[in-house]
Length: 558
Image 1 (cartoon, rainbow, N blue to C red):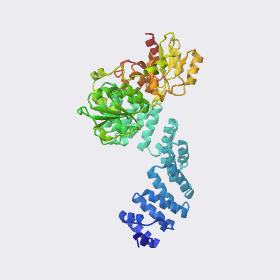
Image 2: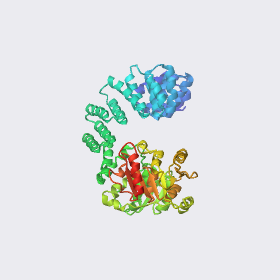
Image 3: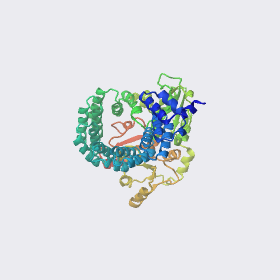
């Protein structure tokens, strides 16, 4: 007789006793033996199955635990312990779809349970169904968990950019717990978004007072001054945060931008490495390859992208220079860019993002955004910046030239929109821009991706100005053809976006309209760009673009 046959003949009460004793004694070896030996079909008692499910969770056998709990539910539908067990498993697995269903079943068993309402609100919050999250959080107002609910409701409204409503709930929460650091921090962030910097910093200072051994309060004050444009004070408070914790990633990262804008490149690039910790969108490759440095001069180097297409194009300006220090370079790249880069840099191996990588083929790895810490450490290094480093397809260029104005007018390309996280600050209104450009005798060409036909048509109707739009061109996906269209332009007028970066890389005269708080790459001063000699920068100093548009007109006339 097999051991399993013997165990199956045991009385279920005896097995329950053994399992309970094992759990008390943390004897997981015995538990694992029993779970792997006893056939699930042996049990007909839901209590036994639930106990085996709980035991399976304890030894991380989640798949088996599910089997026990689901069989338990077949025997006794909606029994509480099985539902709780499954809830804990799916919570571990972040399986929000399953969690929603089970939580609703638990609410049937435990109606008006405030903890379950909070849990359900959290689930909907995590899957970004914010209106449903609000519905369940609000059910717990005026209860013993109201403070928790007020903060959670405020967080939802914050994410919905409804900062005034968020403040309303936070102030009520603050009246119940005026030293709660989470409330102080969120209140400060709301007031910053509402343009009330002084009020924001009041709550951030409370945060710093309540948590003097943590850097977050000082860091947030620095962020507030950054939004206000007072960079000197921002720098002071970031450094205060680092006095508390010299390795605090966020303050180091933000200081990197200040240093880079001011031309302190060596220190700026060193601190820029903290982006790899701060930015959740950066996905590091699954490899143990050591990081490359300038001393490895015979390396087979693997370069991995870390941000968007525009950032890749920007940092790739140094790839050919980097190759002089390496035996070979292989880089992962967006499929949209493969044709363009294979043509432009034939000595570098470009692979699409979905390609399988063999780490044994390389000796070192490097994030593309880490190249400048080796090759752009001072202003002299920027003399190596090329006017152009990408080459458009000649046949495609000729195709787009077929439609060029026969009167030899200047062809001016226009791009005015971005989807980036600070797009609201840097996007411009095409209608307002064309109010200033309508009297110039140019051939205007659309370079903007997205649904722009209505905007273009309204310009023609209002100002009698035609903007040529190539309807067969996929402006967002077909970047090789977009590059060819860009190359037919005499001038490109744009905000900072991927189209601008492509235009700059192709060596086209590119006029860039910068918002009040532009990226570090544009620095804090001047009309020239150290990265791209063909760029002309127009800096907007206010919330409105009128002065910047007037400066643009003066530059075009000159």
